[in-house]
Length: 426
Ligand SMILES: *Cc1c(COP(=O)(O)O)cnc(C)c1O
Image (cartoon, rainbow, N blue to C red; front, side, top):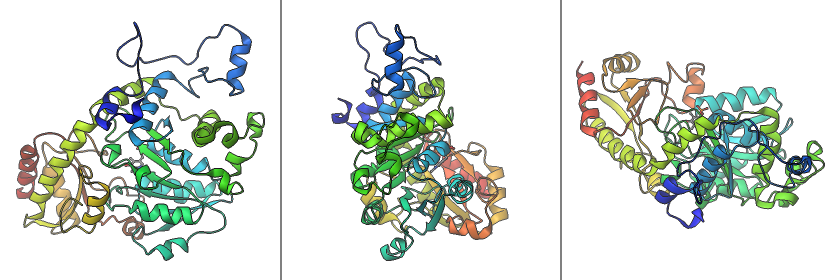
C-alpha cells in the first residue's frame, strides 16, 4: 500500500498500520523472544517455511516496521536494519563477497568505510580497488577482474561532497554483471532515490539525517529486487546454490526478489548479530516522521550559508554543489533537483591553523564528531575523523588538509551566519 503514497506520507505513515484497538504509535517490542503454542509452529519458522518472530537477533516487529518504512521511501522490495552504518556497509558487501573475491569502489567515500573496505575486509581475503568516480568509463571498467562482485559509491561523498554519476556507475556495473551498491546517507530518499537511476542495493547510516537528532547510531540495507542473481549464478553462489547452514535452501529459488535481504537476515545477522535495539529503531522512526520537513530546511539553510561563505574575503574555497560554479552543480541538478543536503565543506585563507582557530571561536555552531544533525555542527576531518589516513590517502579520499566540514542544521539561517561571521572576525 505504502508504495503508491508520496514520500511525505510514507515518512509519517508507512511501516506501522494498526487496526482496531492497537496503539496508534509504533510500539517498542522490547522483547528478545516470542511465544508459540506448539513445537511445530516454531519448527516451521526455523525452516523459513513460515514468516514469524522468534528471536530479536533475527527479526523484531519494531525493527521490521522501520525497515519497511525505509524500503518504501527508497522504492525497494525489502530492507534490513543494522546497529550502525558500518555494519550495513559490511553486510552489504559480505552478503555477496567471500575470501578470494574482489569489488570496485569509488575512492571518495566516508573514512570509516575506506578503512573497513581497504584494511579490515582485506584481512578476510576480500580485496577492493579504489577508483576515482570521475574517471572515464573505460578506466573504471579496467579495474574489474573475473572475481569482481560489486561496484560501490556514495551518492554524495562524506566529507568531500563529490556527487556520484549514478547512471554511469549503474551502466558500468551492469556491463560487468555485478550490482551497483550506493550509500545514500547524505541525500536520503527525500532528495535522491538511487534505484530510479539503476542502483541495485542502497545502504544508509541512519545515524545521520534519518534519525536527525543525534540520538541513535544505526544503519539500513535496502534491496531494489532488480538485480538478476540467477543470470550470473556462478558469480553469486551464496544466493544461487543451496545454503548448507539452512537445510540446503537456495535463496533465489525460495525468495525471488527477496533473496538478498533474506540471506542477509537469515545468515549474516544470525551469525554476526549487529542488530539495532528496538528502542533505537523507535527513535529512528520518530526522526523519519519529519525527514521530509527537515531535509528541505537543511538544504535551504545550507544554500544561504554557502552563498555567504563564497563571497567572504577570508574564505579560500567553498565546496557546495548548490553553487552554480561548483564542479558537481550539473550532476546535483540532475540527480537532486530539490537540493542535496545540508553539508558544506570549505577552507579558510591561511590554511590549517586558521581553520582550527575559526572553529574554536564558534559559539552556536558546535565542534562534534557528527554530521547531518538538526543542530549546526562543524568538524575538521584531517584532525578528527580522518586522522588515521596518510596525507596521500586524504587527498585520494578528496579531503584537503584545510577542509572544514560544516553541517548546517535547521535553525534560522541568519543566526548560523551571524555565528560564522563573529568567528571569522575573531
Ligand atoms: C557516518 C557514515 C557511515 C558510517 O555510519 P555509522 O552509523 O557511523 O556506523 C557510512 N557512510 C556514510 C556516508 C556516513 O556518513
